[in-house]
Length: 146
Image 1 (cartoon, helix red, strand yellow):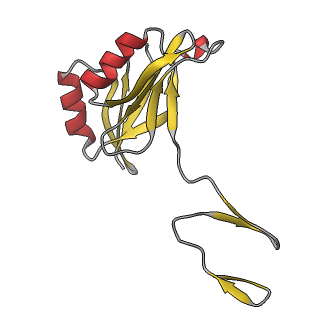
Image 2 (cartoon, one colour):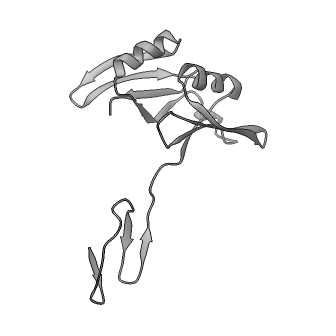
Image 3 (cartoon, rainbow, N blue to C red):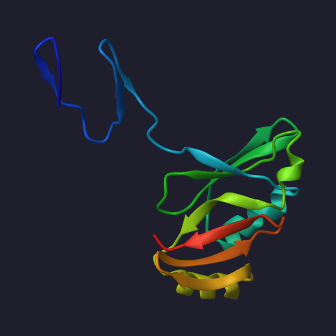
């Protein structure tokens, strides 16, 4: 609760705000999508849909490439298979994002059986369990417990 000119205000708990004496400004609420750079969009699309189980939200022309937006079942954040012009050097690097799984070891076994290449098998630390896999372009991702 906060007050202005003697009037009490209560913000909805799900909406973060910045306050000053004159205004209330809604802040960022979520990540809409993350971009995964790729050399071959068709090969990447097959990997993310067939091997990882993502679903296609949109696949449409976008300049010389396509805008391919995927969704992890049960998640709100999208994964876009797109490489901005001039950023080709990003392809094949360590991605600064992580996927989560309820059971990293079981997910590792299932994805390995589907042909996903892991560069680090599941490893348990004091904070949780993680593994590292890569896509056909060599982009590497952490798979982590929640």
